Image (cartoon, rainbow, N blue to C red):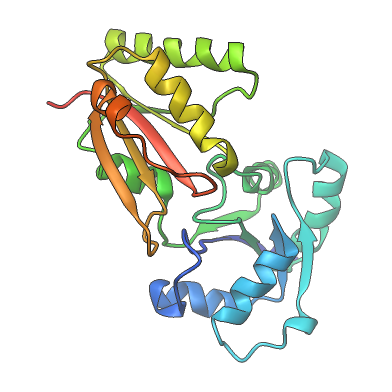
Length: 237
């Protein structure tokens, strides 16, 4: 019996996009898939509806795959794929699997001999690094920094130490509603000469991408409350 495939389906990085933003291959896969593992069912339904592919959304099956999903739940979700059914994995934004629970489905797939097929699409992390002016040859992605303030301040100091010792660009994220708290901690903790890039609302109507020193950020803070952002510290060559 032939097993199904796991398609990693990219979504928009911003709400203000249409189907033309996605590669034709992505649209074709969605049109021919009726089983999805998604981070949020409502968001996934709205995303697929926006593509205007002529699909009856009510006939599609969705299972929630998020950070709370247990191994037994994932095994249950993937049982149809082992039995031969294709599945599409959809994140809240961008490519599934990067700082994203879609990784859980991919791990299961590799452990069970399922084919993983990544589809072309925008990555906020990749876009942030390439638009920062920092080295894209060597960088480290740290995901989300700790929530507790003391731990977060220590993590920020560690990022600067790693930047100075390795020269690697240091990339990290924050939940959008905590952006301003993180920015305050960054400008208060990092050395004044360190360069900080903020890439916010990437590809959106209010896209903001800027790299400058911490000293400059202290004079010009940007209100990015609830706006998806990626942060990087690095060196200009």
